[in-house]
Image (cartoon, rainbow, N blue to C red; front, side):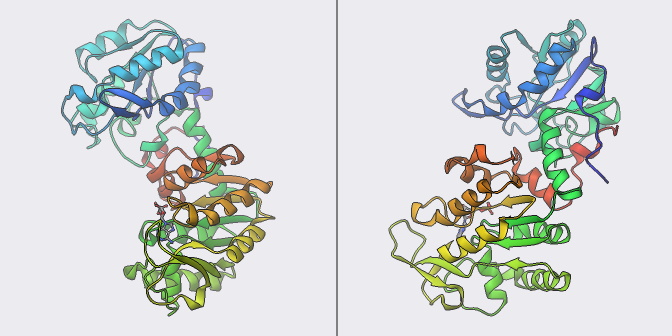
Length: 396
Ligand code: AMP
C-alpha cells in the first residue's frame, strides 16, 4: 500500500470546523519544567495553518508514561503555557481528555481558537486502541489530523482508532516524513544507497532485508559490521557480535550477491583494548583483528571507500553511526560519512534516534534533506511495515 497519496491538511476544508490534531508534545521535562520545546516548535506549521484557515483547533498528545491513570506530574499544563507563548495566543487546557471539560470547551470553540486536551495516556483505553475511547475522541471534532510521526507505529486510540469515525488527513510534520521516507522507498531518485550502522543487528535485520530489495547499494558500518565478519568466519576479537543473528547476516550477504547488489563492509577499523575513552587504540584491516581488541570505528580507508561509493547517489538513506561517537577518537568514521553525504547532490534521509542525534551533535544537521523525527517509527517505516498512524488516514 502506498503512503504517498494520503490526504494532507491542505486537501480538506477546515474553515469553521472542529479539527482534532494528534501532535507529538512528548517533550523533555525536569521537575515540571520543559527542558526542550523542539517537539512543540515542530508542530507549529500545522497548528498555524489551521488557525490561519479559521479551524477550531483541538490538540492532543501523550506526555511520558502515566499508564492509564490521571497523574498531575504528566499534565499538559506546561505544554499549553509554552504553546501559548509560541503562538502568541491563548491555548485553553481541558481538565480531562474526553470528559465533561473537554466536551464543553470543544463545543464553545470559535474559529481560530485553540484547545489542548489533557494527556491522552491518562485514559486507560488509549494504548489499547479502545473503540469506545476512539469514539469519544471523534465526538469532540469533525475532522481528524495526525501529525505525530513519532507515535505513528503505535495503534492507539488517538493515533489510529479515532480515524475510523472521522474524515482524516496528515499534518505537515507527517507529510514531510512520508514524502522523504515513503518517497525513498517507493519512488527513489536512483541510485538509492542505504548506509546502516549502530550497535544492534537484531534491531535492523528487518531494515537490511527491506532495503536490500529497494536499494542499489548497501553499506554497513558501526558495531553491526562485526556480526557480518563473524558470519564469514573472520576473527573479530572482542568486537560486538550478535550471535543470534549470524545466520541472518549470512542470508543477507547471500541475498545481496544473488541480486547483484554491492554490499559494502568496512575494510579497516579502529580497534581498542577496552570500551573506554582512555583505552589504547590502533588501526587494522578487517581480516586481522587480534584477540583482546574490539572494533569501535571504521578506519580511514573505509571512510574513503564509503565516501566514494555514495558520490553518485541520487538518494541516500542513513541509519546508525559508523562508530562509538560518544568517544571523540571513534567519531571520525561517522564524521567522514556525514561530510561525504553533505558533499553529494543526493536527497539525504537520516533515520531518527541515535543517528539523528549524532548528526546534530557533529554539526551536519542543516546539510541533510531530511532528519526523521521518529526513532522507532522511522525504523519500522524503513522495514517496510505498515505504520498504523499513517495507514488509517484517508487517501486523496
Ligand atoms: P543504534 O541505536 O543501533 O543506532 O546504535 C547506536 C549506538 O551504536 C551508539 O551508541 C554507538 O556508540 C554504538 N556503536 C557504533 N559502533 C559501535 C561499535 N563498533 N561497537 C560498539 N558500539 C558501537
